[in-house]
Amino acid sequence: MRLFMAHGHPSLSCRYGFWRGCRGAAGSAAMLSRFLQCRGALPAQQVAEGGWIHALLSAGDSRPSAPRPMRQHVFCNRELRMDHVRVIGFDYDFTLASYRHTLQALIYEKAKCYLLERLRYPQSLQERLYDRDFAIRGLIFDNQRGVLLKLSYAQAISPDTAFLGRRRLSEEELRAMYGETLQVDPDYVNESMTVLNDLFSLSEACLLADVVQVAIDAEIAFDAAAIREDVSKAIAWVHLSGVLHDTIAETPDAYLHRSPELGELLTNSRAAGKQLFMLSNSPFSFVDSGMKFLVGESWRQLFDVVVTSAQKPAFYRRDTPFRAISSNGGFVKLQAASRRDIDQGHVLNGGSLSELSRLTGWSGRQVLYVGDHVHTDLREPRRRDGWATAAIVRELEAELEVMGGEAYAQLHERGVAVEQLLQDVQLQGTSIGMSAVDVASTLDALEAERERIRRQVPTLFNANFGSVFRHRSDSTAYSFAVKQHVDLYTSRLEHLLACDANHRFYPTRCKLLPHDPPTLPQQ
View (tube, rainbow, N blue to C red):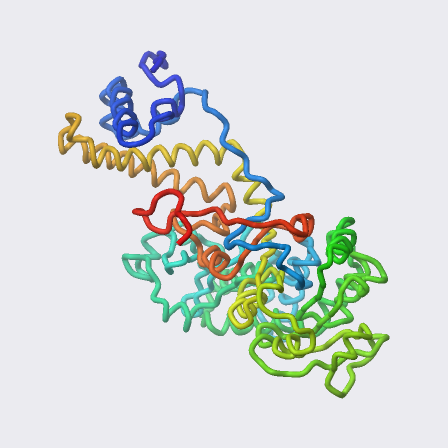
């Protein structure tokens, strides 16, 4: 190990060289030994102050580059053979249609106007604007306390990801609210918290926080549940009144991303023998205008079945017949739809999963359904009829961009080193001559460095709430739902459609528990 003099003191020439190449029990001991040699070369005062861990791991400038994640990758949770998939279905919003950030600003503004004009909210709310950098998908609003926060899959709160209005709460404030463990009871989550789980919820989360802040600034006593109810009512009005759909239909270029390859990819899927269907909660007039903008006037010829106003997730649970929409889209027929309506290319309205299966014969894993909302789109058809599922997670693109950057790579590798050293010092420190006091102080310093890294990494993704997928060292509730209910996921539909029609997806095997080997055999 080559040392050099920095500011008159020996230091490492390679940022992570003291543990690279060390593997297994013998390698682990060698790594710890080298680590302690370098520690011993540092000034006594720096060691005593506990800042030496950070200095040691930061020294030098030579490190092999970390592998860069592929932004166009389709990720696999469960094995899926595309040659066994006969039918592919698609949601419309945020799946076939990819929206610009201007959509969130539009929803925010229309809902804000509803609160101001119909519910007489304070005029100071008028000054608030949608902040695209504030929230992420999967946040939780506490209907009793008015706190907007992120939970892990085990309902744990991260001290850095909780806001009352637009003010970040301190760890002390959170412990006073939720207890010393910062663990939320699952019953409280179900009964007193609202999950904001889709991309439409970004504007809702921002508006909730802004309304709470307006009340705090004006020193108005408020009931968080009432605010939640009013904002929910305002958001629902934007969607159901037609104001959102009409605005987008009038100026689609302002709200929709064009995808020149979408039509060709759908055509290729049909040419490969796949049957295609659309299943959307949006009304036909809105879907029709959007698909004409995205694909062209003849977009319906790409699909064997088109279902609109489906009312998912109720669509999957009820037993309701479809009603066909007239050929010109002018009205919904009064009688129940039949197989003849499908053969004639009529768009179906409402309906149910059971009726779709009866009319088409589609069931099980011969069907792959692609959507953006894990709970509304994907959970129920997988549970009830065994469909394969794929999630479009637009944030994945930005998160992979961060993970491919130098700042993340450095913090990630430093974090891996600290985690390994914590175990090695604990298990082997005394066996190589460290005193109990020295072991304890070393572990304290390593834990402090780990905490510093854990607080710094999330800010690379979002300054307020961190990663959509990670909650410190755990998965977020959203990430856990993706793992539980989704077979495939990717950032854009085009990435999935570009895969070969006979492609076989294999999951990356992960350790289930610490005692498991790194790669598990099939069991």
